[in-house]
Image (tube, rainbow, N blue to C red; front, side):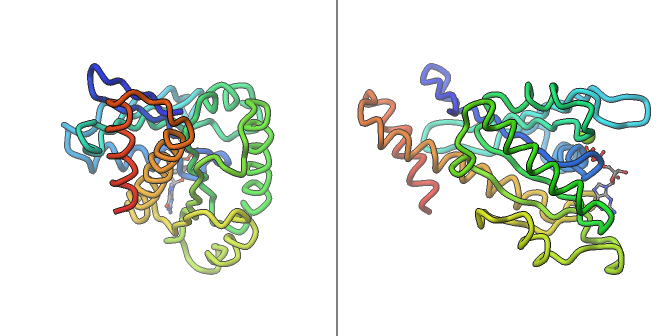
Length: 220
Ligand SMILES: Nc1nc2c(ncn2[C@@H]2O[C@H](COP(=O)(O)OP(=O)(O)O)[C@@H](O)[C@H]2O)c(=O)[nH]1
Ligand SMILES: [Mg+2]
C-alpha cells in the first residue's frame, strides 16, 4: 500500500522496474533523472559493478505533482536481472506498489523475457501478492534497433501481456516511452489507493479528502 502521511501531506509509492539483465531498467531511471527538473527528482543512487551492471539496485525518488493537497512521491527501484541475484530481486520487490516490466525487444532475448516474467510471478507470490491485481505496465524496450533484430510489439504483447495491462514501445536511451510507462504505472497505483479507501470505508475525514482527491485525479 502507498504510504499516506497526513502531517506532511505526502503520498509515497514504491515502483519497481523489473526485467531481464540489460533490458534497460537502469536506462529508464537515468533518462528520468536527466530529463526531470531538479525540484522534481532526487539523486540517482546506483550500486553497480565496474562494468555498469546493476549489482544490487538503483533508487530514484521522483515527485510528479500533487493530488488534491497531497504531494505524490514515487520511489523508483530497479532490480538486477541476472539469474544469480534472485535473493536481491526478492528483497527489492518487497512492498512494491506497482511494477514496470521492461522487456528487451531483441530476438535473442525472447527466452530471457519469458523467464524474467515467470520469476516476477514467483517472487510476488512469495510475498503473498496477488499477481492478477498488482498494478503492472509492460515496456517493450530497444524498439529503436534495426527491425531484423527486434520482435514487433504485437508479438511481444501476445507472449508477455496476458493481463492486457497498459503497454508501451520504448527507446529508453532516447526517452521514447519512458514517461508514458511511469505515468501509466503511477496512475494505476493511485487508482488502487482510491479503490482501497472505498473498500475500507473507515477512513477519517482527512483520509477521505485525500482519497477522494486521488480518485478524482485518476478519473480525470
Ligand atoms: N539501442 C538501445 N539500447 C538500450 C536501450 N535501453 C538500454 N540500452 C542499452 O542496453 C544496455 C543495458 O541497459 P541497462 O539500463 O544497464 O540495463 P538493466 O540491466 O536492465 O539496468 C546499455 O548498454 C544501454 O545503453 C534502448 O532503448 N535502445
Ligand atoms: Mg541495471
